[in-house]
Every structure is written in C-alpha cells, then in structure tokens.
Length: 394
Image 1 (cartoon, rainbow, N blue to C red):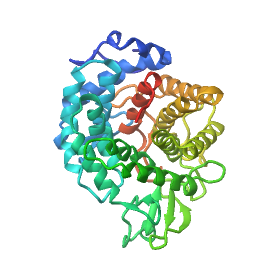
Image 2 (tube, helix red, strand yellow):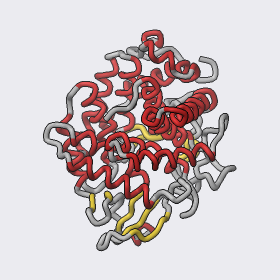
Image 3 (cartoon, rainbow, N blue to C red):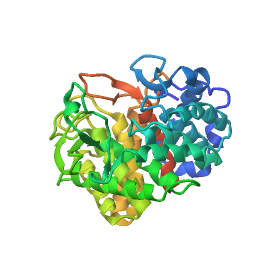
C-alpha cells in the first residue's frame, strides 16, 4: 500500500478479503491499513524469540524492535496484539503465535511488587481465556497477587513501592498513578472465573472511585500521581512523574483515565464512574479537534513531541464509553474516536519497520522513547478496531 511500507504478506498472514464482513463498517482508512498491521505483526512474531525479549519500541528509521525482558510492564501488549489479530481476522493461524508469546508470561503471575499485572497478564492470558478458555488459573493467580497491593485505608492499590528510594518518588509513601486504572480489568475478569474472589471487583471499583476523586481535577483533566498517607488514608497532593509539571496534563494519562474509568463504569454499572469517564472524555475533546486528534505528549507543551499512543488509548476508551452512554453524547464520542483512528491511519503509519504507528512518546522528551513506535500504541489501535464492531464486555 502506497505510503505505508506494505510488502507481501508473511506466510500465514490472512488476506484482508478474509476478514469478517463487520470490519467493513470501520472507517475506510483503518480497514485499508489493517493488512499492514497484520503483515508487520506476523513477521515480528515469527522472527523474534520471546525467551530473548518482548517488543517495546522502534526508533524512527530503524528496522527492528528494541526488546525488554518478560518482567517489563509492556510485555503483555505484543501477545495481546496477536490475540486481537485473531479476533479481527477470524484466522486461526494467529492462535499458535499468540500462545507462543503468551506462555512465558506465566512467570509473572505471582509478582506482588508491581501494579502492572493487568497490562502484563490480562492483555495476554486474559485474551487467551476469552479466545480459547485456557489459562484461567494464571489470570486468577495474577489477580490475587495484584489484590495484595490494595489498602482499605486508602481505598486504592499502591502503584509503586517507593520507600527509601533516592529520588522524588521516595517521598511518596503511597502513590496512586492514573496508569493503575488500566490494570483493574484483571480483577474484574478474574473475579468471575473459577477460584476467583468476587471481592476483587469491589477493589477495582473502589480504586477507580478514589482515582476519580483525587487524580482527576475539578475541570476533568488528570494528574499523573495522587499521593496518600498510608497510615491514615488521607489524600495529600497531586504530583507528576510522567507529565511536564504537577499542574499539567500528560496526554496518555488523560487517555488512561478515559479508558480506565469507562471500563470500571461498565464492570460495576456505576453511574459515578461513567460520569468521571465522560468528564475526562469531554476535557479531551475540548483540547483536541478534527484533524488534530493526536495530542502533544503533554497538553501544556503544544509545540513539543506528539504521542500517537495517547491517541490510540483515548480512541479505544471513547468507543467503550460511547457504547455505554448512547444518544447524542455516545454519537459524539464515537465520532471523535473515528476522527482519531482516521488520523492515525492516514497520517501516522510508519513508512517502514516493524511497528505500525510512528510518532509516539513513551516518556518525557528529555528522557527516552521519543518519536518512536511503541508496542502499546499498536495494541490500543487494534483494540479500538475490534471495539468498533464488537462492544466491550466484562
């Protein structure tokens, strides 16, 4: 395909004509670019070895992934993409690939030192359970591990273990970052599986409510970090690690809030969380516009690097929210998601290399992963494509 660096399909890559007819209702630009996504994804899955690392980022102009060990917070996204490709195409050739990349993640299910088990396990084993019924025990074990980080005083899951560190985070005795809202679906899903605990869904709901009161500002914008006193549960302040400043709005964090609050509103049928998701979404829509739905990495830095991963996350969350809200607001969110996906598909596809989307920003511009392809940007683009025709379901 001209402008997208598409080459001949890799062996086992489905022809786009074999995709389910429902995919035709996607924005035409997205339908057109999906074969490129499948071709690049298949080549990476077949040429790389999960025992040697999981794809994370691709610098502009480079032809290979920078990989990270399986204990990296991003390891679940690549197998998740493979499961998404299976769903989008209906081609069972993706099953073996996805299982091969999912299996090593079983080594992570007992970890109690991270809040990222949703990203790691639910996006891999969670997808596998939905697709094949296999791996439910791994999802349940991971949820049990994640639940150990919940404080009934704070009514939230502790995001980072920071005590004693020689950096800014070391003064945060109980930090809650907005990213953690994305890990709560692991608890929701596991609570309904054999051996799961129904209380896990309550933990997820309580955490989301806490974040909606503390990470969210009155105007609907999101602060990256909310800091608490673990002894009393008192909310102390808003701060930032990823954003430009404590009072700025990190764009992917705003996307996390739309996506995470919408997911928890759906899981708990909670009107307060639905209102929080709408408030975050309305702020996003007020600060982006048709033709400019891909935001800067921080909304306070409009002339600096953009973040396509933030746009993909927001688009997927907007589709979930649109399905729940319906009516004029639902149509408004769905239209914004369509505009975002169209912009990503027509302007942001990398001309070559293994990642689909270019121009993502993983961290602060002075740090790393700036103007790159990111595995989670591609993951949420494909998730949004699936959600376009298949509403999210817990």
